[in-house]
Image (tube, rainbow, N blue to C red; front, side, top):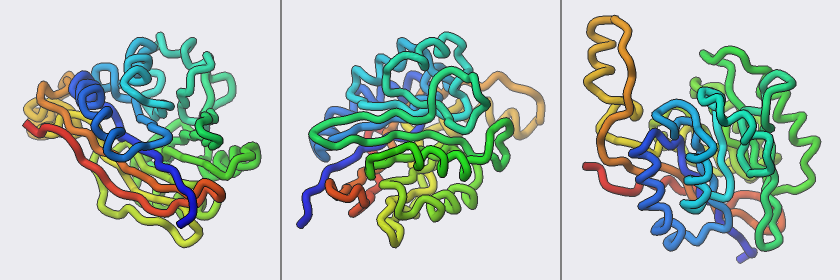
Length: 262
C-alpha cells in the first residue's frame, strides 16, 4: 500500500454548542483517526453568524490546523484585522479586491504542504465572483498537489458541478453551508474526494442550529423573528479523507457524526 495521510474536516461550527462539541470531541476524533491535518469551518461560531479573533484562537487551541469561513465571514467586524495576520484562516476567495484576508493559505506538516482554499457559490448567494474561474486562478498559483477546497454554497447542483470541475486537480472538494450532512461522499474518477455537504457542528435538536420554536413561528406567521442558537447539546459532523502522500490523490472519504444528541 502506498504511503498515505489523513485529513479531518469538521463542518460549520454553530455558536457555543458547536464550539463546546468541538472542544469536547475533537481530541477523541484525533486519537481515533490520527489526522495529519485538522480543518474546521468556523463561519457560524460566534452566536450563529460570523467569527471573532478570540473564537478563532479557541478553535485553534482545540486542535485545528486551519479554519475556513463562508458567507458570514465578515459578520463580526473585529475579524477584519485578524484575517490579515499570518494565522491559517481563509475567507471566500471569490470576493472583490481589497477585502481583508485571503482565500488560500498553505499549511505544512511532516513534509506535506496542503493548500487550503475557500470559495462561495453564487446560486442563491449574491455578491461573489465566478467561483469556477476563481478556482482555476488559484490552481495556477499552487505548486503542491495537496489541495483542499471548502466550497461554501447553497445549491446542490453547483456543488456537484464544482466537484467535477476540480476532479484530478484537487485532493478534496467538500461542501459546507446547508448544515445538513449528505450521503453522497465519493472519490471521483481522477482522485478527488467529494461530498455535497459535511453537515454542522452544533445543536442537533434545532433547525440548522437555530432555536426550533423561533423558526417555527417564522414559518407559521411569516413575521420577522430574531434567530437564536438553540440551547441544546451539540454534535460533530465532518469527514475523514485518506490521501496518497506522493500524488495528493484521495484514497477514501468517510462521513463522521460524533457526540451527544441530547
